[in-house]
Amino acid sequence: MSEKLTKKQLKAKQFRTPKTEKDLAKEQAANAPAAAPVKKRKTRRGRKGKPRSTSSNRFIIFVGSLPPNITQSELQAHFKSSSPDVIRIRADKNIAFLEFDPEKDDSNIQHRMDIALLQHRTVIREKKINVELTVGGGGNSKDRLEKLQKKNTKMDAQRAKRLEKIKTSSSKLSATTESSSSSSTTSASTTTTAGAPPSVHPDRAKFLK
Image (cartoon, rainbow, N blue to C red; front, side):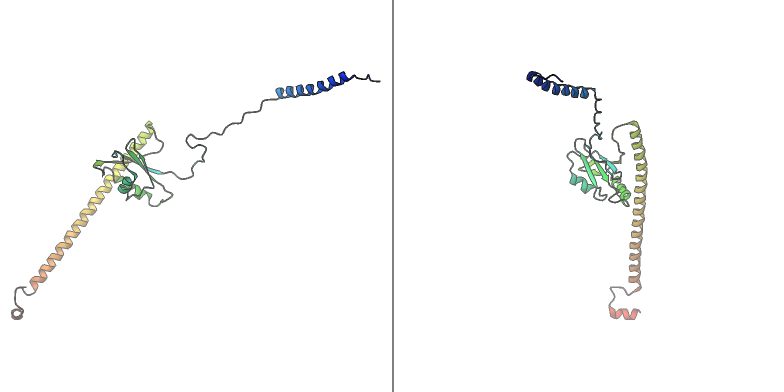
């Protein structure tokens, strides 16, 4: 027969049991392996978690030596014939970038860029501007500068050929116009000579026939 516990012993047992279970829970938590820290997803600097753009590459033309405080409307008016899709101005450096988006006009984009490049050394506010091709990436690395120099050298040669072609076409058109004008003058002179002199009276002209 089990020994009967006093009230004091029962009370002590009630307090002892929860304490033991609590201690066991602490020990289990301490012995459990630490959970692996959740890794943060890396995002590209500047994009702030935004998804990568799916649009195709942009074609960019550099415009330098701009007059101070050049405005968007001035550049839009100057490059109206090439109609760039975006014009970005860097007022602190007096430069700008013309962007051409192939998604908007893929078939005609090369022609528009050629027209823009032909405006190299044109004048805005009595100041000659530079219009050149550029390559993406930024910076002044040796590889990028070499690539840029090759592009601009090639473009200079193409620009010279196009200008020569335009001059030749203009000369031919001028010669054709002068020839047509000369032929018209000769024809009019011949007609006047073949007929009666303009100063002869109509009655006398009958006797001259």
